[in-house]
Length: 293
Image 1 (tube, rainbow, N blue to C red):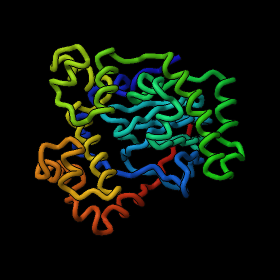
Image 2: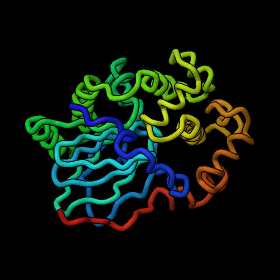
Image 3: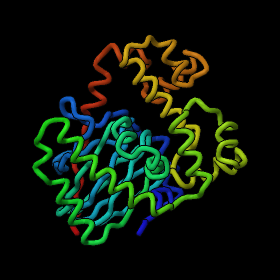
Image 4: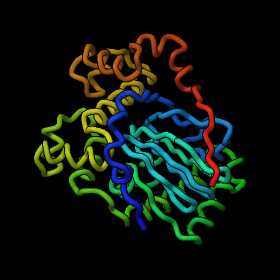
């Protein structure tokens, strides 16, 4: 049973989102593995952040509130959350008995595991309700000792969980078809203009933007810019210089990339890649907030 997309939980909350800092924090992958499952440690929490890796959160016990875009989501044991690439998310508060498993994979591993099935399964943040049997199965997989093996064993172990989770997700559409088609297109081609996305989604630009904002919790322009910045970072990490990386990422010029990067991270690309700013951003944690339930 689906619980709906995050933006449907509490519309209007996003009026304060522009004043909230959103960090880039890549998903922590140990060693050479392209996937990882970690058991949440309640002493700290990551601030509101986004990354290129798709992520699942399994609520094994207790209750909590998450922020995602312009929404606040209330979750309890048995909920499974999806965070697609570029979707900001944050754990706002949790009960004293809260138990969380966080599952992340690289985009290439997700694509290899899911194949063409991933198009409809991975687009958009969402919350799925597991039955008790499914919750027990997922929790057992997350806690299994196979996570102590080498990269190949870890990827095989996570791949089975990833495939099953998205098989359930694909059966529970919870957003407007225009949003689903737009997410599929923009995740594959963040360089596309809104008019091109509207043509591919088979809808008018204004209609597409309205449904996207409602269902995803952030504007299409903001989301598309995040995906372009993520691609720019990946290309520079792979050895590209700034100008060709900016053009290949979908920016019209390096000056546009520079401006968007500065607005998003409050530093320019040269400072981000050439100083300790990136490490400080990656390693930042906030105090844990727990509530009695």
